[in-house]
Image 1 (tube, one colour):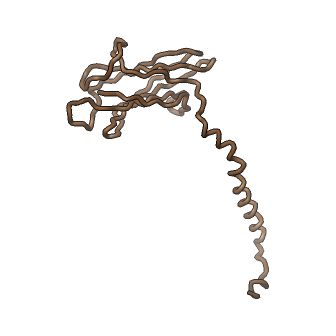
Image 2 (cartoon, helix red, strand yellow):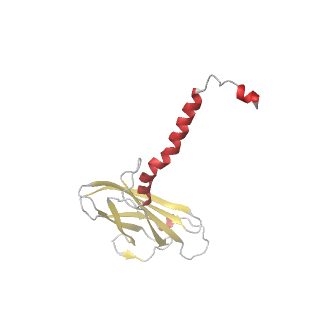
Length: 168
């Protein structure tokens, strides 16, 4: 023990002080940042709302489901701009097979939504182009995931995503 007491401090003792400062700085960061993190626990306020998603035929008539191998079907998305200013938007629709969890279709359409406007955007697909893991002739269950972003390449969400069941 006497050997340890008689040892001199190493010439790099100032690192200990810096280390103490760095450690104490990191220890205080969570305390300083924790009030701002609570903001993320609340649901964010988006400028656009997805009001309705439904299947329609090319004439705009509502469909309960689409027929496998059938004619062209459209997914109609009704949006509402909650803002007092116009908003560029990209509406993305993904169809995901529930049995295999594989995306079968993705398409998007860009538009501009006027202030306080409630436009409807329709994205078409051909049910015959959907490959399914189901070998039976019964309808396949999909989830239509609808996203609204400001643009496709560097997206910022404009609304909460919405998942709607679709049967084809």
